[in-house]
Length: 348
Image (tube, rainbow, N blue to C red; front, side, top):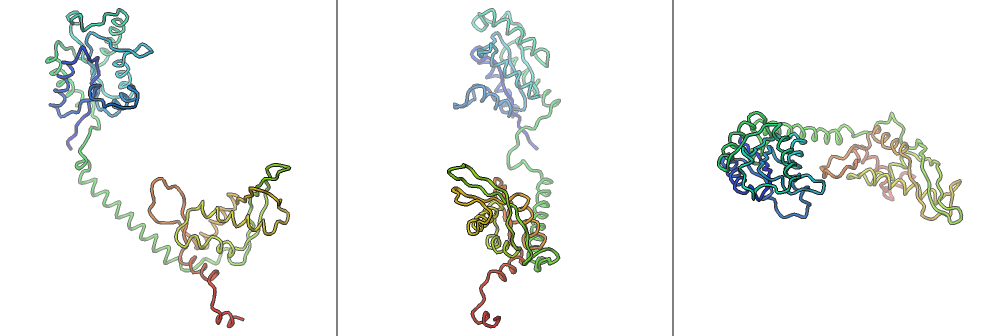
């Protein structure tokens, strides 16, 4: 598979224009993608954030040292040295190219500041502690970069960049096709299970008129004593629970919506028959406890009345969806459907 490598070129700029041009030409002839400050687009991002992003995407890093340390940040370190340290920190293979005879550099291309010169010497020593090559002029630097990068690529393999239409090997395509076929088969089996084997409820579990006590938290606000919160419970038959939740699961419904629906039903029951519950509250609400809600879901699944939804959704949709099985749909119809007048008279 043909790969192209992105190579970050780091150096001072004004004094090494010809040298950078020569290095870029060498990289392009090697089918590599050069990246450096002169190629950065205008951006609203601060300079260092942009530089870091380009380094992170690069496969190899080259630093060229001449006679200048370069512009410095407020911390007194040059961008070139910051780039070098960041590439080393990321574990990107680096190679340094150091001017062979610093004393031969024209005065106009050297640091006039003694402190900057000292920092350059320290930075040069840091770079030379790793793989480096000396260079004499721009042409010599270009040839040294070509040979040095070949050696760097051979000994430090990197991911590189591949054309989109060549990114997958034939073996990968076959594997993906096999996985897609497996997924389709599993989805088909799940649908068949939900509509076939779940044609009857499992009556070995509590259902119908059998009762269950569900815990909830009742909240509200009363002007003379502030927020009110009380824990209690209400008793329902399983048929009542199915009558409340079932219509919302004829298609598929997210669990938070189902839970909110049942909370509203419990609040309505409290308001219609306050009993021992606090009343005359504003901003009133009722919330079934996690444990009681879990009991409802588990029981309806055990009865084979509901299963997980199977529709495809966006990756961002993290909700659990529930829908009625065929048995659940039949059971709901028997509970909620209104018989004809003739049938009612016959039953009477």
